[in-house]
Length: 304
Figure (cartoon, rainbow, N blue to C red):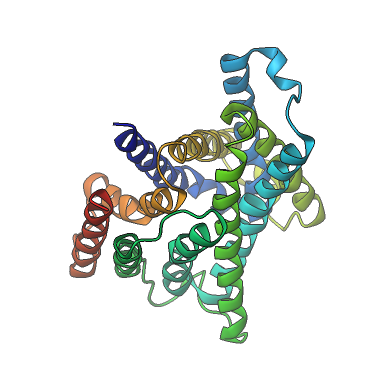
């Protein structure tokens, strides 16, 4: 029963992480990536603080564990959610959406062997095959843009973009693996609070260093309803970073991190499914093939 609860939590995280980008859409159109990065942390930090206070009271804000693990959780959060996301945005610029999305979606292929090597989690042929099926399905459903694409491949060497994609996946893998380590030494509400502090500080520092042209100040002069846009980004941060991370972190208490990662990698599949069901987008052959591969991978995981 606990295993199925772990699957449900990981699937919930995947659904939340698939839905959050919809709320980021207008913010990304009107703000720089670094501006969106720190504004979303307002919702993240507030939600993590409310959850910590609700579950442990005000005394839980006082650090009670090892400073080594607390500092490690803060640093790992910055690498995972600040550096990793920044590299992902750079990868989108270098390679374009049609190449960057499927390549970076292959991060389960790093997590599965890394969790076996560092965390001594099982790496059965079934888990590896399931990861391959899921990644293959994600490649099929990845968006393909033709014509004028604002995120088209740049004229710089392709190797740079591929290197950025690898480091993006490495940062995400590092964050997912260390999350499993820290959850064994720090209560989940406190862990999320420490991570939120680190990510907020790192995102704000990054924005101060490179605010970009589309700053928060410029939003109030160019947008008709700037407060609504900011509110959507803040809510997306609360939903995607706080709630989504909590679901995933709790899931690894019941199932191995490599299995949880394969489940949450369904995010592009769920986003495509939302587009078909809610936005009435067409069900194309590549999308149908991708859905079949992903469902096969999930079913295989269930019996592994």
